Length: 397
Ligand code: IF1
Image (tube, helix red, strand yellow):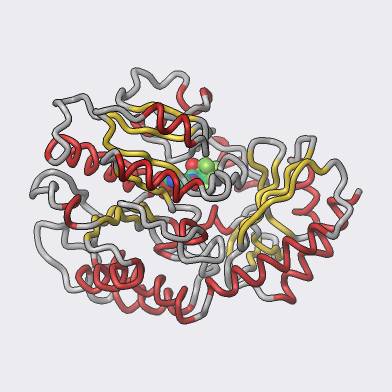
């Protein structure tokens, strides 16, 4: 079946909630994918950082196949033999004591919100239904009703009201605004350490540490959404580790937690916070299932064993430097950390994405003017050089 036919079929039956590049991918391996016509592309999006380990990582494929023959789902009504091992793995790797497993990223964000609100009522003694959570402008945390309620982008929420109250948006990286927003009912400050959807935006040197100090002084929890920035993407296990002395009270992870195999997400925190959650308070049919657990455990081990964090730092630095050496037309700003780079131009970059596709590179614009670069972290120097030749062609003229 050719791509034209498949695209027509998709448009005929599927909700039109996306405007994808018209490439119909059939197969993937490492940094490479192939379309139904057999054309080969380098994947420079990595499913928005859900494929840090690369496409179809053989170790992940192996554990999945083995687990499929044994057990996939028990629900949490019964225990399974894989979940405890995943808990231990992620706790030892991240230093968080208590884990609540979910599926999609948005679910894990919702989970964090439930936990911190309940913490607010039970521990901080905030009056019932008054809990306030402070959020950053231009955030992206997912697409549920509650999450879009605190989006600062009208297109994400228009037409979907009534929205969920209890959130206050401050400008991203604005310490003074954070201080002003904190009141007796404030239970948490929830933010991305680096904003992805918004175009790889940094909050400013030292912001997280100062925000953390401010939060601690006011008994406000600092919760970071590292769904996209975490698990090696920026050249550290988590983006917050670029700053000395930062340890958020809670962390939200997803995407590459499963190496792109299956939706696996989690809210990580410590027992002084997680202990407000009692049987019946929260859960999901698939969250913490044995297939998800063994995938996530292996996905984490791959990141460590294959030194993907170190590779992200080294390859990212090289890639950014080489891009800086180019004579990029209409360049507004070039910024990045690790293998997460935004090329912002003074024009719409959709045509650049289309040109790159013709040359064999798949990447996507964000907010019209920024090309977002985020290849799988398994990429090597030869592959980067291959990509750089093509970026040069497209960006220099
Ligand atoms: C789509 C964006 C990226 C996220 C952060 C939570 C979630 C995401 C920091 C929710 C998800 C995805 C969703 C995906 C596209 C993508 C995206 F452009 F929409 F904003 F990556 F930049 N927190 N981001 O980045 O996780 O529920 O999707 O598992 O098409 O919506 P999810």
